[in-house]
Image (cartoon, rainbow, N blue to C red):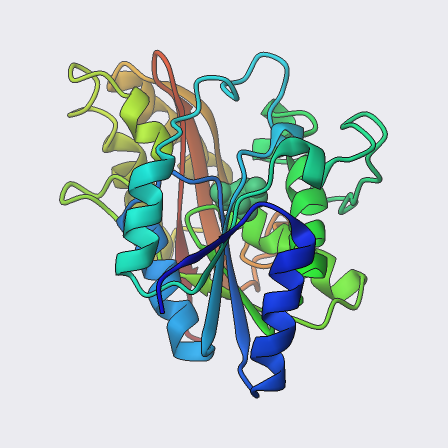
Length: 286
Ligand code: PAF
């Protein structure tokens, strides 16, 4: 069955109601379009968990700050539709802004995960995560999937969504899909198209530095502050501007106690025209 495209909530819900009546499980893959291999990995995971796969494409204005790249964000709708169809996705939900925010953005009821919203990426992108959790809560309510898949590349986003779903008792299973990477380790991202050819060989430093910290921790180094500082210097040496490098407890994102066994090492840097993020996980044996 070819991909069905819905711009309105009502016909999408009617279609999903029919699928549910036939006993099908529903999976949601929420995206902002400009689909790459990373998104296709999310779709493959969705297909393992559900008979009916719904993708959404919505460049959510609520999660972009005033000086951010909402208007420049790459929009490639025709090729996205082709990719979704070829990947065997069943339903595409691509609403206009007025369908998602009928009362306007300023009046929209917001979902905020206290304690997780303003740290790390949230510190340099005020309002961003409130926009993410608000739109994801809406998408989960619209689609009512059994399972929803999000990329582990956006580790803080995934942690927020897990917290939101638990706090608001939303009946959905959230699954993280592993980071898809280019051959040199750079995490795939729609914003990679903003990296200049001159910067491209140097941006791998973010992943290299996060992996270096991981190796240090696995070798027994627990001076987290010194490791973060050293990694920042490595990035500066590559002539790039670090935003933050942080070693955190993997699920709460709190500064880790020495006893913490599951760590996330997260980082962000600025290139000339983009802000890139990445993370690696460390699971220490007892
Ligand atoms: O990760 C993204 O592409 C977006 O933040 C999401 C989850 C689709 C919400 O707009």
